[in-house]
Amino acid sequence: MAVTRLSYMSIYALDIAASEKHYTDVVGLRVTGRQLGQVYLQAHESQDHHCIILNASDRAGLDHVGFKVSDINDLTEAEIAARDWGLVTRRIASADILGQGDGLMITLPSGHVFNLFYHSEKVGYSYGMKDPDIILDHVDGISPVTHLDHALLAGNDCDKSVKFLMEALDFNLTETILGPDGSSFAFFLTTSSTVHNLAFAPGPPNSLHHIAFYVNDRADVIRRVDMLKHRKITTLDYGISRHGIGGVTTTYFFDPSGNRNEFQCGIYEAPTIRGNVPPIVWAGEHIPRGAFYYESAVPANFFEVVT
Ligand SMILES: [Fe+2]
Image (cartoon, rainbow, N blue to C red):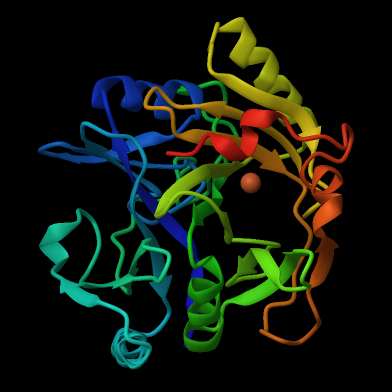
């Protein structure tokens, strides 16, 4: 089974026009498609059709998470595995989601829905696909992010979801946090060479903690916070700081629906093969340093506010 890195997040938007403005003008994505009640967006340095789908809704939060597989036969293999694990699956047609092929929806034990798919339409790099320049003349947003990097999902039974993702879909555990009884309760998983494509932590069922976009360097994170304040984006949540877990430089803010976003950089290269090296282990009492290395403290609302 070869699941590639996190491909897209399909999320709800209370005011889809306001959300589109946020993900273009603040995050720096480009619109790549529209259909009734949906807007599709992609980063300038990514070629697949979309990394964010906005769905007009009366609620915030997560509709589903998309991961691409590298072999069409992986869909059947994943379907058989999911059914063996007693999970609900359903096939979707290529017409159901713009710019991508047939998919396999799997509902995880934590309630989160994953869509595995093989084909994605290519929109190309904004910099061009032949003899590209390295500067965009017309930039929407504070500055373009390079790509959708990872998401932190919250819910019940995260350990069961993680077990399925690792054993059936070959996700690799890079870091974990242990509770007082010595068992893991938070998980950082990768399907590529980055420290995490996906993380799980306890929380309300089937909820979203944050969606993270990658930027070039630490100075870029700092400049974005300057710009968030300069443009009077009132939804700045936390940062600038640095995570002990993963070691990344980070800042958090909210989209107009209340979904938490993150700008981050500085990930380390992780082993690509599951089980090649053991994960980094954090004791539960060291969560403050793992979450925010400089302050060694976590704001009260950081874990409580999810969508
Ligand atoms: Fe993050």
